Image (cartoon, rainbow, N blue to C red; front, side):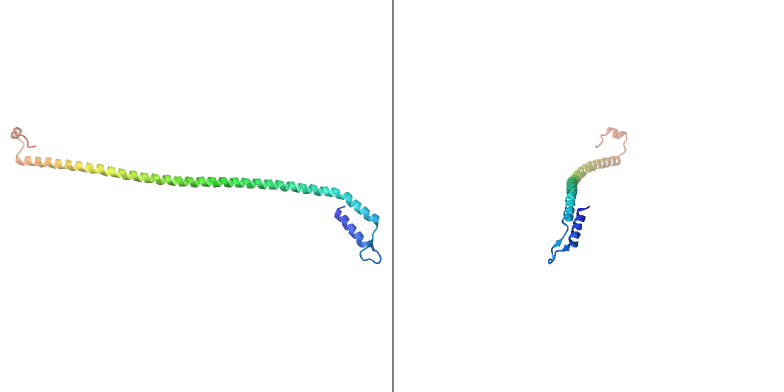
Length: 165
């Protein structure tokens, strides 16, 4: 029988006991009955106490295992968080470095473009001067040729005469 049931039985025994004459709180109970009930309770209590202690130990072990598991999960979560933050920092750093390199490359490309434009402009100006001198030389040659034509035809006489240029 459960110890709580035994306690209820003892309470009922005391409640049903006859009152002592001229007393409100005192009663008469069968001493043998009460002692037998208390002995049964005493015999049952150690087993129940051992079961309760074992249950408390098991509960403590389960709680400790749960705490260790929670600590492990928290530790893994913190490590993963740190890894993700690190990866994010590396990514942000790489993006900034990439943007800096692209800006430098664009600036260098613009500088080279300007140098090439200056070089081509200078080369074309030199070529233009060369062509202008060549054109002037050609015009002078044509003018001389027209002048010779006006002086006379190129005949046998002229072979003896030196050309004016």
